[in-house]
Length: 496
Image 1: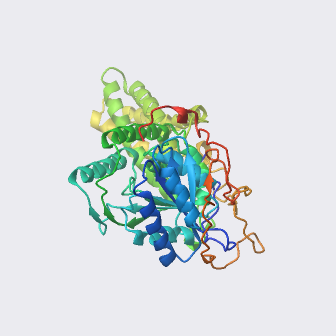
Image 2: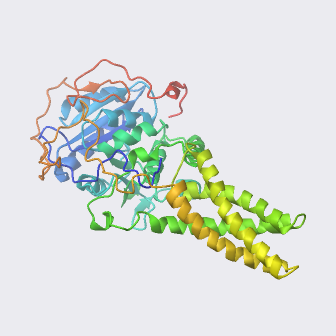
C-alpha cells in the first residue's frame, strides 16, 4: 500500500470539542512499583498544582505494577481522600504494560504520564498538553536535552542518556531529542490506533511508541523541561540499557522489512491552504523527483563500475546488458521503497517484472548508442564508451521516471482520496460529542473543573480490568484481573 498518499484512519487535527462537565479533559497516569514512601507526597503535590493552574477537569490515576509493599493501600487511601484520584492495580510488572492498560481504559481525550519522583518541574505540564488540546500535535514529550532545558544529574546518567539518543538517531533516524524522559502525553484518538502497534511492555515502550509515530508522520511536540535527578531511583541502568538495545534492533528490523502498517495512523492534510490539492499539480512530484535523482545517480555509478568490470572479459554489448540487468534490479527496489514509498512484499515481484520491461528501453538506447559509436569508430577508447553511455542513460532515466510514476508505481487515487471525517464508531469508553451540520464538532470551551467534593472515607475506586479493555467512564469497582496484552506478556521474571 502506498504510505505517502494514504489518508490513514485518523481524521484531520482539530481543537478538542466541548465535552460534558463530568468528563475530565486530562488523565495523568503515575506508574508505580513499591513506592509506598514517595507516592503520597507525589500525588498530593501534583493534585495541588493541577487545582491551582490547570483550567480544565482532570484525573490522576495511580497505576500499581504488582507492588509487594504497602503501595496498593496508599493508592486506595489517596483515592478515598481526593475526588480526582483513581487507583488501578495490575498483577504484572512493566511500565509500558501499565501505561497501555490504563490509557486504553481511560475516557479522557488527553492522556499523560509522569514518573512518581516528579523529577520534572510541573510548570511544564500545561505547555506539554496545550498543543494536544488545540489539535496542533498528536504527541508531546518533555526534553532534557533541549538547549533551554535545565538539568541536574550525574555524569554517568548524562552520558548514558545522550549516548542512547545518539544511537536512536543513527539507527532509527529518530528526530526527537529525548526518548526516555518520564514526561509525555498523547491524544486519546491517536493512542487508540497507535498503542496496539507497540509491543514492548517495559521501559522501551516510550521509544517504540515515538519511533512508530514519527515514521507514520504524526506530529511530536517537544517541551524543554527543568529536571532534577532522583538519586534514589530503582532503575537498573545496565539491564534497562540492554533491553533498550534489543528493542532498537527489533524495531529497526520491523521498519526495514516493512512489517509495520504505518499507513494505519497516517494523518490527512489539514486546513492549511498550502496543504490542499492544487489542480494540475501532481501530488508528491517534487519529493519523488529528488528521491529518483538520488537513486538514479547511485545506480548509474553502480552501472558504470559493473560495465567496466564486465568489459574486461566480454564485449561491449554483453557487458552493457549484464551491467544494466544488475543495476536495474537494485534501482527498481530502491525506487520502490525510497521514491514511491511502497513497503512490504505485496506486489514486489510484479514491480520487478515491470522494472525489467522498463529496462528494455534503457537497453535499446544504450545498445543503440554503442552500436552507432562502433560504426563511426572501429575501436573507440574506453572513456569515449563511458561518455556515450552516460548520455544515453540520461535519456533513459527520464523515460524510466515517467514509466515508473505512470505504470509501475501509479498513484491509484490520484492523491485526491476523500479523507475520513471521523474515527471508527465510538466505543463504550468514547466521550460523546454533539456535532454541527456536516459532521464537524461545534465550537466551544472546555468544561471547567467541577466543584471539589471530598469522597467519604472508604469509597476509594480501585479498578481491575482486562489489559487494553475500554472502560465505560464510571470507573466502578470491578473484579476482573488484568490478562496479558500479548502472548509474550506472560514471560516470568521481568526485571521491572
